Length: 222
Image (cartoon, rainbow, N blue to C red):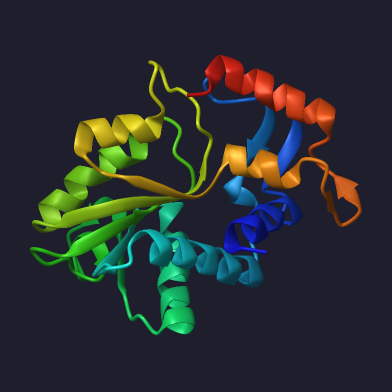
């Protein structure tokens, strides 16, 4: 089993990927939900870092100088991915994150951890991207820190659905800023792997659930 399939089953077992009837923040009725707030143990953090590290290695073979985790959810992701890159691949990659509010004492400033340098290649580490708001907010933070080269946005799942217009948030971020997003998995890969497959004795995507997901993507998908 590849890391993508392993990640899908990991999300199910962690209670992060669930199926049923949900309403998204934007008011869409969706048959599946991803709640990354359910990651809460050391084991989960370690595994999550490994999946992000695998995605980084696959999509950015030239490596990066730093991982940036936007506050707050991106912080543990950047740290765990940095640890996994070192443990699994022997790559000692810097990590940093921003404060929501700048300090005027101690080390000061909005950046914590590695202090970015001009020319650094940076990957932004996020959980999921729906509207791209977090990216728009963190770009000025990075650009104010140094003249960095933002190589990519690494996310856990691409829901492959439209934002407010006809494009997905990922497509919009690329169009607006030229930043490519690489998901560990896409919703289509989730559907393909879980359809009819038992995970610990339970089938999460049967024919009925698959039809609901297809119908949802028919309306909101890209």
